[in-house]
Amino acid sequence: MTSRLLTRTLQRPIASSSRARLSSPSPVSRIASTSYASPRHLQARFNSSFTFPSATADSTSTSGASSDPAFEESSSHATGLTANGKTPKALAAFSMANKVCMVTGGARGLGYEFCKAFLDSGCTDLAILDLKEDEAQAAAEELIKAACVDSDFNPNDYRVMGVGCDVSSELSVHLAYRRVMDTYGRVDSVIASAGIVENYSAFDYPFDRIKRLYDINVHGAFFTAREAARHMIPQGGGSIVLVSSMSANIVNIPQPQTPYNAAKAAVKHMAASLAVEWAKKGVRVNCLSPGYMLTKLTRTILAHDTELKRTWESLTPMGRMGEPEDLAGAIVFLASDASRFMTGSEIRVDGGYCII
Image (spheres, rainbow, N blue to C red):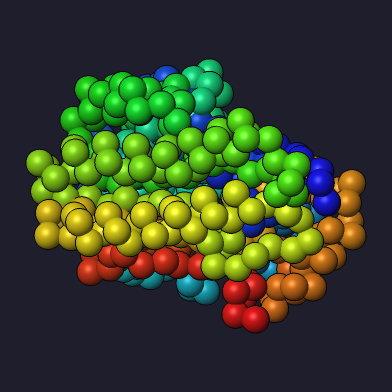
């Protein structure tokens, strides 16, 4: 397993995914409008935003599918409607309405899914940071378009911007935050999702690549969190989520990835340490640790290595890999007021992998 598949800046399918590599971050979005929906309008959107992964993951619609009672039941959950067509109440603390959110590594992979989850939960102000600004901008436009489907909202109701940022550079992170603050005036929830993973044996791992991995995965998370706190403390607080991995808790097999595992363990403990440091200043810092996730990149890689996929699934108690959508509830919980008395904690979404 001395393969060294790489993928760059975006925290792709959970840190632990083996030969897969993750993506990156970027800028410049569009639409800056002063027209905002009323709180009631936002709440209505929020009430209908929850979906079950089983109803959305890799689902394909076919004519006649609605004749299946199970399909009808899952569809009613997906729209947030009860059997009689009424919209039930939803816990308002989970709403991301009126919050300014920022996601690094948001142009693709898990970062992109986090952005989608925020928009689906009522967020209308979102900054997508990625290494290439044009990719971040393209993601912003794509997300706005998707958010308007089956919604009373239109593109002018959203302010989603793409920002070019190399998280391994403290200066680049500082300048990215300056653009975000100039646009929105505040930042409430920040997700440090940018990251890479490579698979080399310890003897074969080139030092320059180890350094690059640490610069992005560890130093990038620190720069992102520190700059977030500098802006959150004067405004009264905020929520920071560092995306780690189940690899912070276990050693992945069969693929070798020692520097990656150590880096994710560092990110996990960084979240706990910063949480204590900023707890009385209103800034919460928590950690999300995904398991093996079937992002587009991972699917492509595993399509050529079905044995590796079977191995990962056999080591996961739930017997499957996660869908990116499986992380939506966890990321919204950590970023929203629903977790307001929670800091320094880790949420693992790994199908039970770390239990055994």
